[in-house]
Amino acid sequence: MEIHHEELAEIRRYIENQKGYGLQGKAAQYERYLRVIRKARKVDSRTRMLEVGTGTGWFPLLCKANGLQCKGLEISPQLIEVAMELGAANGIEPDVELGNVEVTDIGTEEYDVIVASSVFEHVEKWYDGLKRVYRALRPGGVLFFESTNKFSLQSNEWPVPFYAWLPDRLRYRFRIMVQGPEIMKLGIDFHQFRYPQLRRALREIGFQTILDAVDLADLGRLRGLKKAVMATAKRNPLARRILLTFMDATTLVCTK
Image 1 (cartoon, helix red, strand yellow):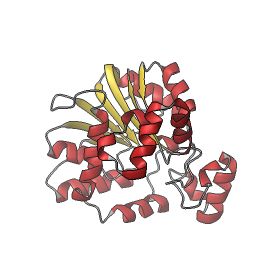
Image 2 (image 1 turned 60 degrees about the vertical axis):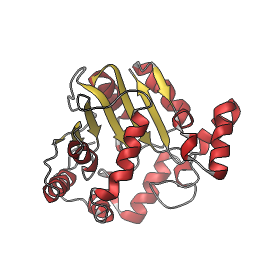
Image 3 (image 1 turned 90 degrees about the vertical axis):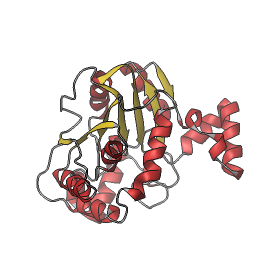
Image 4 (image 1 turned 45 degrees about the horizontal axis):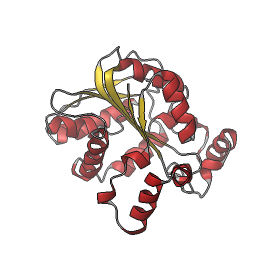
């Protein structure tokens, strides 16, 4: 991927969709991130965090507002500008810098936690990016990874059933036909991941412990059919495999 300094229509669309949330509208998502990360390690004011792909910057901003350290790396100058505006409106200055996780040096053993949610599907050289993330984590550090799932019935990337099932080239052609060639600049989902694929890659890179969405599920927060299905998946390996295949996202917490 490249850094594009011109205004991109897909980024502008994303910004417009996010305008109504503000910081308070992201509070529940912020709490969810921390709840999931804390399945693997403690998070407090001494924890050094990095978010890759900050979007509008709400996570680093809420971290700072709550006494936590979180730096941001964002490839879009448009989104960094929005993060600065959102921070100014709330009396907080975000620590977000421009960069591409494929090539930007994010350091060696710098961070205790790295957050990468809804970003690696847009990273062309995703394996290289994950290697940089691994190198930037301290021993015992944690990666919170969340992205697309190849066989989800309804993708969060595009509201068409079975969209994610399409081969990459067909997805590209479809999106270019509908939205124009500019979609290939930061807007397209280059990858639809699968849990087995990610596990293999993360272990190759060096991660020691990998918790998936079933491991991370808190049965006490679920009700009805969702609770019953997740409880079955926790007990039964085949049920787990089937559930993970069709979930709407790949959610993993990995320890170095």
